[in-house]
Length: 363
Length: 127
Image 1 (cartoon, each protein chain N blue to C red):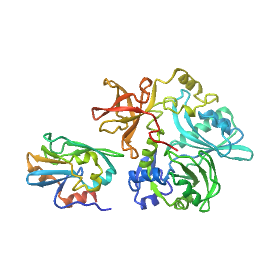
Image 2 (image 1 turned 30 degrees about the vertical axis):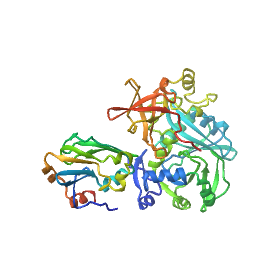
Image 3 (image 1 turned 90 degrees about the vertical axis):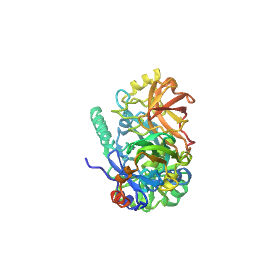
Image 4 (image 1 turned 180 degrees about the horizontal axis):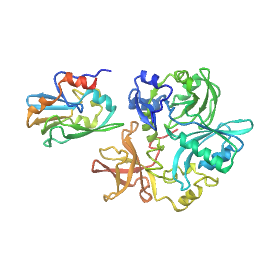
């Protein structure tokens, strides 16, 4: 299978970006340096091309029920222009993906939703929605618009003023969304993001990507900085903190219980109710390494007496804090912030401590 | 983009440079290597008195995004270590051929350097 490319692949290449394969997409990983791009978002504003994210639109008389049965949060709570974070789980409660669900304006009196699966998950999500719609006999159209839509994220404390200058249309509060016009192009604009900063995400027509990209004069940022920013923010990365095949996790142990609404009926609901009732065996925790050493994906986590008890799922030197940080699954008994642990770096246990996430103050 | 490859030293295909002065060999990584790694945040180096083997790993360098082994251009004994890098690993990015040096080796067989790449050959490799 050949890699999918975002509409601005050539534009980014011309700007000197380096690229990486992510979820089957060739995406810019670095434009200038991760540190420069990271700092721009923490202190000023930066723009990311996140066109690898999927876009699936679900519309019709039963759209709400279909969405509610296939995501863990309460879709009925969404008014037009609201958004919510949710997990997509199987019957056993194991995460298939995490997503943001947006309620679009109604169409012909029926509710309409946009949800955003992770890179490379759009086709499996689309099939899942179609299969369940048909099995349940629900009336809803499901469209995979991933290759019709570009998506950009404008993030950072100065994003509101940059967006106010570039956008014709109303501003929105955190987690709210609306249609706006940017340089003559209609976009779906949401005040959401994956960096821990205030910011906006724009979903727009693929062929208008360059016009909209050029409307935001700020630091271009790649997936490298996106990863360090989200890690400081304590956000999950699909493929790292959960993977249906190689790292099966429930949203409870992944620490996103807030996105699981057990009062609704959804696939996997009973399994997750049982996990909530009994408490998960393991939990995702933040770690800070206190000695010289950087936690990296796959490194062992040990108890103070040297027993291997867990695995690092993500780690880096935090550009904001100047400290080595990471996320890891450990037995629930070790999950309390302040607990002393060790991360095994090239065979050497390095002292570490469980830290509450997010690691930074987030917007 | 073009990268500096000073003529006064020799190179490993794995992107370390070796500069011989009065019988000791100073070692670091190339301009190309620091650019490929991106922001260097950590180096792990041997201690003075440790032995290193020809073309074997002597340390580790980490950027924000990657972990990479460092290879010795010659076998011998470590006689000096650039401890400034422990607090300022970014020197490897800022000045890879001077302030960003890593170790000095007293080589067992300085002739091992003859097998390394000349600057022009290394420049071809990264072109």
